[in-house]
Image (cartoon, rainbow, N blue to C red; front, side):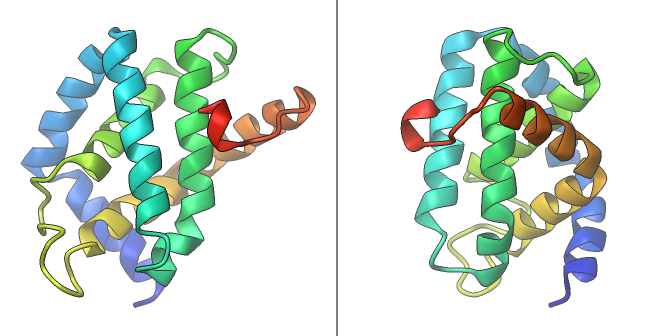
Length: 150
C-alpha cells in the first residue's frame, strides 16, 4: 500500500464517529497529568512493540515518538509553540493508537493495524509543520531522545 493511500484512508478514519469521540476525550485527558502520563507511556510502548510487525509502522515510528515527546513537553510547559486544537488532535491520535476498539480491530491478522497506520500517516502528513517546529525546538534544547526522556 502506498503512503498516499494510507494518508487518504487516515483522513476518512479521522472523520469516523469513534475518532470524533476520542477528540472529545482528548481535551479532558490533557488536563489530567496522570492520565496523560499513562497515555504517553502506553502509546510509546505500542510504537516500540509493533516496530517489527509493519514496515509502514517503522517509517512512522520515529515521527510518532516525536509527537509523544511533544505532548510531554506541552504538558510540562516547556513547549507551547502549538495551538491547543492541534494538541487535542495529537492526543486523540495517541488515544486512537492505544484503544483496543479500533475501526479495524488490531487482532485481525494482516489488516488489523491498517487503520492505525492510516490515522498516523494522515496525522503526520497533516501536521508536518508542527513536527518540524518541534524537532527544531528539540535541537535548540540539545535534546537527546531516549526512552528515559518519556
